[in-house]
Image 1 (cartoon, rainbow, N blue to C red):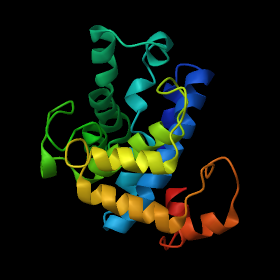
Image 2: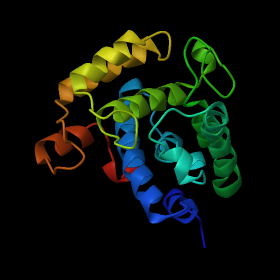
Image 3: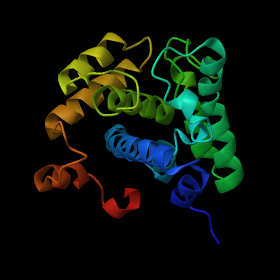
Length: 214
């Protein structure tokens, strides 16, 4: 049996609750990353796989840490931060996708060198890793309801936060491109939960074969 990114995700999840929490976040990050990568001229299947599986290294972590309502202690934070490296290893071993694995490894690096796991600086970080970083952060701020904020940000508030952190956490050029892209697309606040044919047609228009990233 050939292992696919989707089957790997399903098989490694520790239970249904964790699977559902991460699956929908991961799909949203994949859609957003695919759009931004297409706009930046670097979309391919390795980007799609990396965006979908960017958090695969978290799925084996205990729920008590993943879903902890309060502040993480230093050991818990170290465990959480290990997920980029663990995800990199899982994708290399289980799927043989070394390039996608490198993008997963890079998706928590910061432009100014303060990220993890390797403290890369600027363009030392793969552009795909930088793209996933922005899309992951945007979804966390606006959609993901695990334990980050009691009140989700609006898109405009998230755009302001991305702009504030440009050239420290994020590639500022990609932030500008991302905001322009989603503004032009008129991304609905509930874009993932509600079927909106006008938005879906606009979202898929740049792709010659939309099924490649679904």
